[in-house]
Image 1: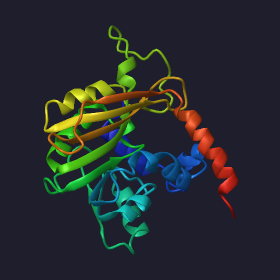
Image 2: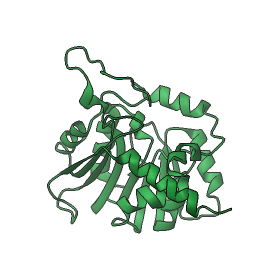
Image 3: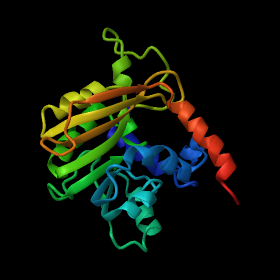
Image 4: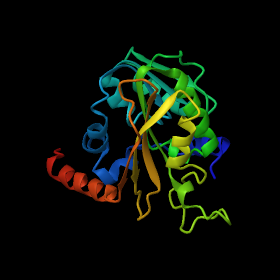
Length: 249
């Protein structure tokens, strides 16, 4: 059950020698992760005038979001990560950087975010943290704003009597977070959950989720569509096989 303090400590102490690109190897590299996996899911929302990225790390996805935004705000609980992003993108004048407390977005003006994004970070955030971020996004998204949030779904597998998982938590996922919890939390805010892709992550279980959130009454609002993608890692392997052919140099 990762706490905010544990997350801050782990990612402060982490080596970051590969700037996070080491986590893209299963797709054949970060470029293939973005263009092969993420962009096909996100292209309908990009480019966007104002983009918010939560927990960018050392800028693995930030480098691509910067191309598709007029203004990009990056927020992380780790000062080291924010400093690294500021240095990495120092030539880009449209980026704005903030350190937060791991659950609030007070530094972002209400109603201004056209697209919010978080990938491969909030999977380590427990349900109470996601509850707070959902509440914050309900205020920060523009009237037609939409958010793509990658989070844990391990809470769906907890034994209701013992609170234990029936399998190993090999990737340090949050155990109190699930797709259904996020959808329920949206119902208490000005947000609607309009899409959830449940995915595998290095195992047979649908341990993770990509959730789409939008403001109620926006052009994106619809009944929530849920897709169970048991072939997600096969997709990654397929992209990696293409990467070995088309990555030159």
